[in-house]
Image (cartoon, rainbow, N blue to C red; front, side, top):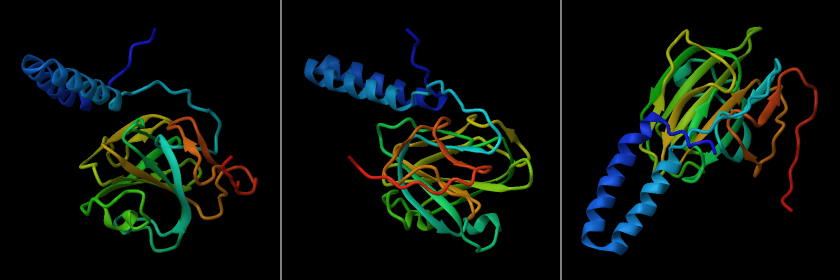
Amino acid sequence: MIPIRIHRAGWPFIAAFAIVCVALWLLADWAGALALVATAWCAWFFRDPVRTVPQRPGLILSPADGKVSMITLAAPPPELAMGSAPMLRISIFLDIFNVHINRMPADARVLAAAYHPGKFLNAALDKASDLNERMAIRLALAGGRELVVVQIAGLIARRIIAEVREGQEFRAGERFGLIRFGSRVDLYLPPDIAPLVAVGQTAVGGETILADLDSHEPARAGRPI
């Protein structure tokens, strides 16, 4: 059996939950049992599973686990100074049960990373892209194309962790950050690229292919069954 890997950012929270659990158990067994469940959930929230990353030039992978909540055309965050021309934006909403580790969508070099303070609206709302606290990362791919990944805080999320710096090189699927405790990640692609996922589809960070820069396949539609 493979043990659960925990992201290092989670250990202080797990320790705090465990201390409260012991204290409550000394007061009442039922309170301790509830706290034990909460401690187990905290450890589960910060899990960092191994992923099998598809390998082929042109593939764009999901930067996060969660549900594809929106696919639309939108201008990239202004703090990245990329202009107002619309790009294809794929939004992935993460609930409190999803893995919250964020991964690079492709082999890329960081051109810029900009933090923008903001509100903590429900991350499922379209306006959260503009109004919520966020970390925007501009990426350069081989061949000159650019992508943008944006970590967006949510109603409960109050902390964005982005371990990136300008000029840093990443491999597709490599971990680069974390958001806690419920949030959204937006991926901006060139507007001529067709998405290979549909709204409502569940994406797996580092594994699900969101787009193929070298494919001329039309956009996919989805329907619930």
